[in-house]
Length: 89
Image (cartoon, rainbow, N blue to C red; front, side):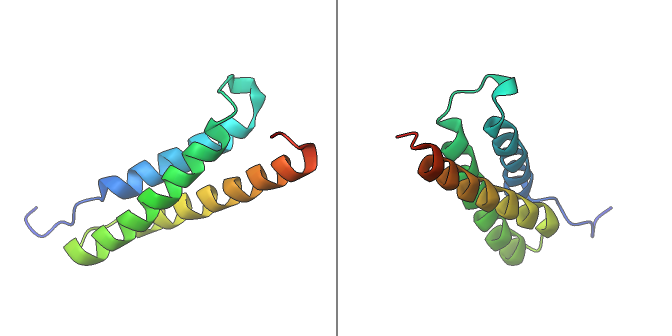
C-alpha cells in the first residue's frame, strides 16, 4: 500500500536491546558483567533517536521506542543499585 507508514528501525533496536539488557542482569545467560550497563544505555539512546525519527519522518513504532526507553532506564537503575549494594567496583 502506498500510504502505509514504515516501522522505525531505531524503535525495534531499542526494544530488542531493552529486552537483552533485562536478560543480561541474569547470570543464566552467561553474558559478561559489563553488558549490564552497556545494553541499557544503548537501548535508551536508540529509543530517544527512534522517537525523534518517528516524529520527523512520520513513521510508526512509538510504543516500541517507549518500551525500550523504559526497560533501558529500569536496567540502568537496577545496575546502579547493584553496584551500590554489592560494591561491584
